[in-house]
Length: 462
Image 1 (cartoon, one colour):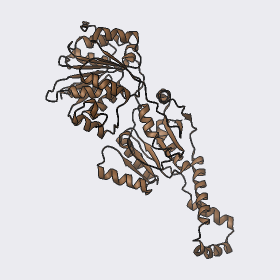
Image 2 (image 1 turned 180 degrees about the horizontal axis):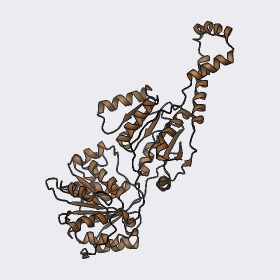
Image 3 (image 1 turned 45 degrees about the horizontal axis):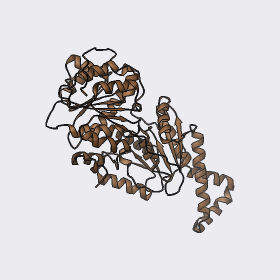
Image 4 (image 1 turned 135 degrees about the vertical axis):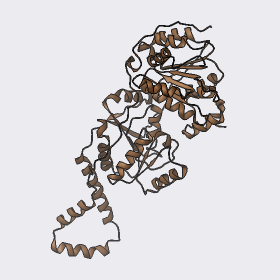
């Protein structure tokens, strides 16, 4: 019996998490899920990167009655980016149980959200301001909610959402189950828990000691639009025998793979849309060396058993530290040294610091490689190939040709021409990428509505 099976999850939910590549629960998941499945209120103290979304997401999915088309679960989050991220994960976890989750947040067209709400999602993930907008319009009703989650509660309260949260919770049936997750237990968090939770279990979890000591870790700060050119410069400079490039989404992975092909690189892509046969084909090509570069999503790469990967390139910075370690752990295996390069934009520096803090490892800033660097790298590769070929005993058939050439040309010119022909010079063929949002940012409370709606405050009975 697997570790997830021991938590008491249904077969449909287990099928979803195994397809997502989850191998074993994180500490917060091991502690929180069984208690939440028993119906008890939970306060989970856990920082970003400890798997807390699944820690509350799995119990929510299990609690949903799939035959009912009413909103039964609510997740309240501080930012629109987090609303989108949590909703995506809940939809993946609830795929085989056919549970539908909808994110609602400020900045998105209200009429579009109303239209989507009419499709009867069973779970809503929303920012406080936009949730209250829908409550005022009566386009969302909370009277059938059986479980509610406050995610990143300390951040929501720091952003000034305390009145909003009190209003929202005051409109939800008192016999609900409440789960609260927070990186720190502040006085404001204690106030909310005392007012709206019933005898909650307090669970604390810290990240696993997740480090990869045999892998050199670097980051490159650059504009989004320059990522691919810099990636190509790195590939030319390093000339890795086997490398993995990670993208945030399936679309991104496909675009990177297609762009690499346009510039003459040998690559293949794997992500969740490939069937097992297609996946096996790409992986066999990578393992046998017929392609040198694998482009992958996090989900597709989890659990991959690949030897000989010398370089990992994070085209997009991963959302959480455990994903980061999963990625860079593909290299530096079996006692070999590996190297990992992570691309970040300026506004993603704070996110990088979170990864550094939780992995307890300094990620070194690396200069942006130029076309000149890339060409020098390829020239060095060519020289090494020529020197290696000169040691092989199969050159007799070519010596007569060489002697004939030397009668009419000087040796330096001939060797220079040979090196030029053999060197892969940098390719600047234009490519296009769809713009993607970075990992969720810390935003002011404008991520939801700025309006305060005062309403009745109904405390939970102890």
